[in-house]
Each structure stands twice: as C-alpha cells, then as structure tokens.
Image (cartoon, rainbow, N blue to C red; front, side, top):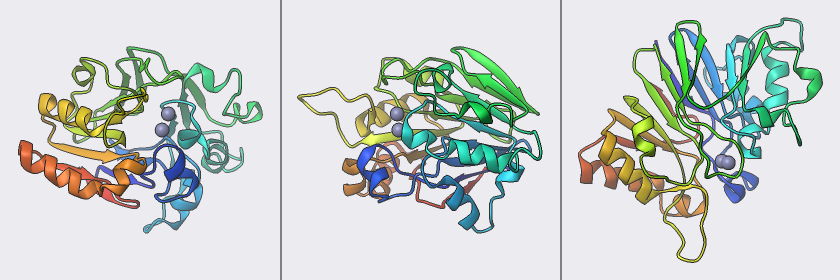
Length: 254
Ligand SMILES: [Zn+2]
Ligand SMILES: [Zn+2]
C-alpha cells in the first residue's frame, strides 16, 4: 500500500522556531520504497512518536529539496538513524551539491554512512527500486539551489513543488495525480518580493493542472492565521477539486 504521512507542516521562520506546527518533513511509502523528504528540526522525534511508529532504520532514501534549515535541521541525526550509526551501510541521500559545499548541512564524516549519495541536478531522473524520482526544473527563485520532485512508479504519480517564488509555467513541470504544494504565504506583499508560493499561486497551479488530490503544507504565519483547512475547502468548492490542508501527523492513502 502506498501512503504519505506529514510528520510536520511548518514552513518558514516563525512557525518553525516557535513550533506552531512541527517541522518533521514528509514520509512517503511508494512502490515499496520508504522515503523521507525534507527532515526539518524534530523529525527523528516525530518518526518515533508516530503511531504506528516509523522506524528510520527502514528508510530507503532521504531527499533534501534544498539546504534551508527548515528542510535539513535533522538530516544528520536521520542519517545516523537510517544507518544505525553506521552499523549498516544503507540508504540513498539525495541532495543538492551546495548541501556539501560552503556551510555544508551534511557532516563530512557521515558521507560514508549511506550506500549512495545522489547529487540533484535539473532535468535529471534517478532510480530507487521501482520508483523514478525526477527533478524537472531548478527553482531559481529561492536563494539556494532547490528542486521540486516528480515521483513515478507507485500507485499514483506524486508531484511536490518545494519552496520557490511562482514563475510562469511552473505548473507544467509537475503533472502528478497527487500534488503537494509548499505554501508559505497567504498573499504576496505589495512592497517586497518573497521567494515563496502564496495562495493565489496555488489557485493558478491547481486550475491549470486539476490534480486528483492537492495537499497543501509548509505553512507560514499568514497561512496558519487564516486556517489552512478553510482556505483548502474554499479552493475545493470554487474549482470543484479535492484540495486538502495537511495537519501534523496526517496520513493519506493513495
Ligand atoms: Zn522552507
Ligand atoms: Zn527554503
């Protein structure tokens, strides 16, 4: 059975640092592969507290969409946990090259622990068992190298649009039947440019793609204050689509 579990739904500074939502990233079980995406601060605790418990020693891969702290805070401890402190050399780490360069987010002594490290590049395809992981486009509007993902080979295709400012045509890169969107902002600001998606961008994307199910996550303060579940309901009704706001600990069967 394929499923997606949101260990955390926090995005951006305040929601993460105050832990108004937890920042544990997303665990997916797709085509028999156990994948953890963007393990922010608290991921290990939330795996172990999860019911049923999620055992990091069973992970096949950890993917970092980019090196920001809310996506990588627990990456080192998760590599330790996945490899049982190097007792078992196993698992694949997918990360951008800059995760290992200046201000590395992965400790160099841990680089030997996983079975393999894959450096994410634009328009690349990676195999993980029966699963194909694709990085169709570089999100150039986010300060650091960043990629969204298309995950194919499971029961349903899953697309994830990670942090980015909206750019024209972004939706065409992410055709998954299940679409996960990192939505930090309720709306854009008239006086400054912020490199994140807002709810208006979400509307543009889902109207064009009409995914079978859209899951919103990675909420900043303005989204949280406006009750993401109500916003999702509004979009669902307006566009006759299934749009759902993720909650901490929520799982979705595919
Ligand atoms: Zn983020
Ligand atoms: Zn970011």
